[in-house]
Image (tube, rainbow, N blue to C red; front, side, top):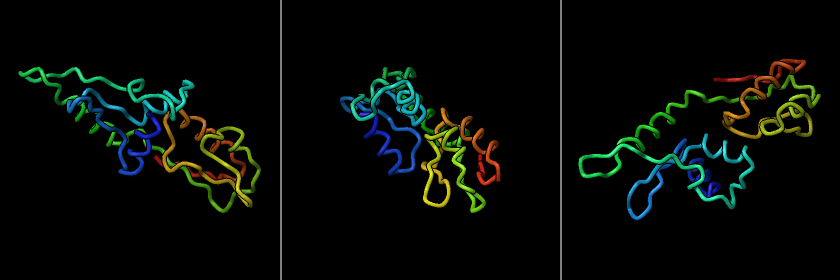
Length: 143
């Protein structure tokens, strides 16, 4: 299931996992593919990984898939699109950030806070907008 793949990625600090069937790598699932699947309405607890799978196409002389999975994993480990956010003590608890991007921000007792360690790509624009709209500039975006 997608949620199990996401849990493994989080546990080991990865952005992608190879997918193996019958002791053969058949493709790769990435955090971005999982985020896209969830954004499209798929339930991560009931959706099999195959629905977010990138299949390998490169083959060696014996017809085995090689290289492509390693390249995809390596590309995603670069974290070129990595975005993080933090909320400083200047937050006045106006809640504007939660209105704009509830997938990333949540209100605490005395100020807003960031719910995720890394902001998934589908929510990065909204997170940036929340930072831009913050009346006290208490949201810091890091790329």
